[in-house]
Length: 105
Image (tube, rainbow, N blue to C red; front, side, top):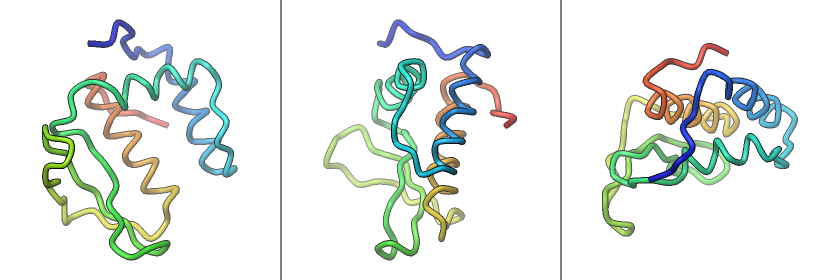
């Protein structure tokens, strides 16, 4: 269990993540890295992930199983042709999972 909990104050880091995506920047401030660590850590079961449907062209959304090599549950209603939009969607979904609130940016 992670001691750090994402809060309303962390919206500045969500905005930073979105700006970084738009700019193609992969450097994260320590605050954003802390938020990402929370989102990427913890239980694997049900965690949102991207899946490649067509290399460099199409991505989909899935949810992980508890086992690392277990099958993922493909969410067929999601398909992306823009990787930045796909990454932002995963970020927003994980934010909602962590906070119980929609990210309104």
